[in-house]
Image (tube, rainbow, N blue to C red):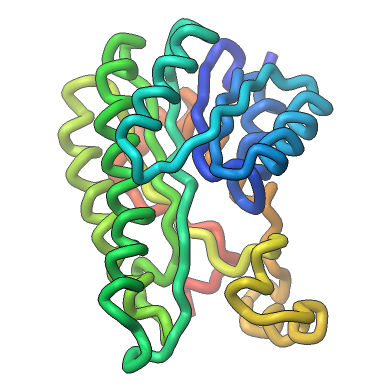
Length: 252
């Protein structure tokens, strides 16, 4: 029996990277998993990987900025599994540019994905979590949402707003046994690294490792095991917190 046996979890943006890794760890812990994303081919790959570890899983194509898609995800979750216990708002985007090259469209794009998306997820999950007698919501942020980062002004602004949303929802959730927390990964090695850091990632991996106090870059399972813990009853007294998974990076 896993710590999440009998629980039903939604993971957005689960077609790659951290979301895919979290979906796998949720399944290992016994949860039934609804994975969402925009790319059906990569979604099918995540479903395959989750099934390989014995998971019960379904994929739903979703744009997290579209409210109608959220309604669809909830309908499929409830019709397939009958309940909802946990939402991981993982889907997100990043724009890395010097401040003077950022556009208003860049900022508005990030706000739609990184703030509107989690807001809609919380809104649509809330009544179903209440019906289940409580549950957990986690918003995937970043350590740059706490302390800022060069070339990330728009991204940091969006993640900072998301953090405020997390705190407010956590306070409201105490009346309904709904815990809301914010996850803050550091440098996590995923297939999306080249999109943010540039091509040929192996050529600069050692430089990135040197910036981490543990001298080890994170893997997706590091984040996955953290969210499993926060979704479990063992974390029943944890809400409204910023949970860092960063090898000590935020302590620098």
